[in-house]
Amino acid sequence: MTNAAHPFDALMEITARPPAVFVKGEGSWLWDDTGKRYLDFIQGWAVNCLGHSPPAIAEALAAQAKLLITPSPAYYNAVSLKLAKALVDKSCFDQVFFANSGGEANEGAIKLARKYGALHKGSAYEIITFEGGFHGRTLATMSASGKKAFEPLFEPKVPGFPKAKLNDLASVKRLISEKTVAVMLEPIQGEAGVWAATDQFLKELRALTEAHGLLLIFDEIQTGMGRTGKLFHYQHAEIEPDIMTLGKGIGGGVPLAALLATKKASCFEHGDQGGTFNGNPLMCAAGLAVLEQVSQREFLKAAVDAGLFLESELQKLSARHGLGDVRGRGLLLALDLKLPISASIAAEAFEAGVLLNAPQPEALRFMPALNVTREEILLMIERLDAILTKAGAARRVA
Ligand code: PLP
Image 1 (tube, rainbow, N blue to C red):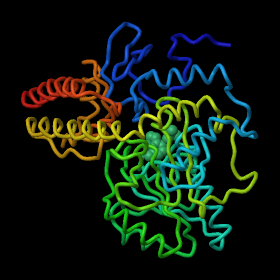
Image 2: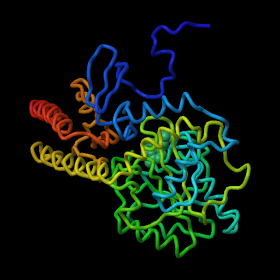
Image 3: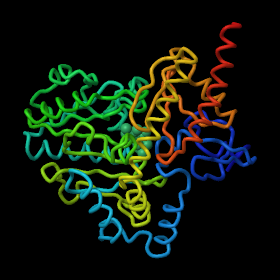
């Protein structure tokens, strides 16, 4: 046995991380082990919808931990029943399967669609997905993703995911055949840099899938739970998908995800799906605490206002520095920097105590807590402004 030389060495190196070690979080703020404070506009990648360690979740977890942590998914438990019923009541879906991550929920959605194909569509199994899409890191969800960097990895991929172009209905039509069972998309492509499907495209996609008897699957792992100003993004387009996946925000920071389906699409039979931790009361208690807050009209209204305020402040910032568009919806926004400098801007921001995400070389993504305050938004803008000024000056000198 070898001893790790540095505490970091004991973890598999799966991404480049800054050397800070976080020890505490509260609301929009994180602290590292030196006591340095960071204003967090990443929030675990749109996960902490109520901010870091919110009392509602901490208390729900502590109370549930004392009562019952997990009885086995082979038995009903009161908390998962309550959360499933609440999700069904607040959405257009009839049944829920709980998962532990977004990737797992999407894997379940893919299996559900294939099962539907096997039962009702002559074993059709192809699911049309989209260039630039991101659905997770299991083998099937990587195959369903349209992320260029995934293409050479872990070959051979799972077959059956032809790729269409977002907002191009003809590109979807061209891929439909007797093998097609479903169309799956993120209503806003988050990892690709916050590129939204238009409401019109989503409406047309619903009509097209209905006309061909195809299932429509919404991956709302990033856009769901109030992130775009409605509880679920599909409500903006006033359509009803057949299947939806939730992750990230639904647990408010703990590993919880969900696969929801209408009665028609909910066709798993015994043995098709399961998992040791799925629907455990501890995580579902956090889910209930989140849903109780996020589904309140006043909470969503405040999140919409915060999103509009952030958007207008980003637009002013962009105008001051001659940058590009601000895009996205609600509190899932991106700023186009027009130059491939997002990674260095995010690194500078980190030094200045602000966490910003650089999903694409030219884009910064903003996904703060849904209860972020105007003061926090202005502070982030002030610090980013200073960094952009410095970067602009450096470019002029060079
Ligand atoms: N789908 C979307 C739209 C996502 O943004 C993500 C994560 O970023 C996933 C799926 C995968 O979720 P997880 O990382 O929880 O497996």
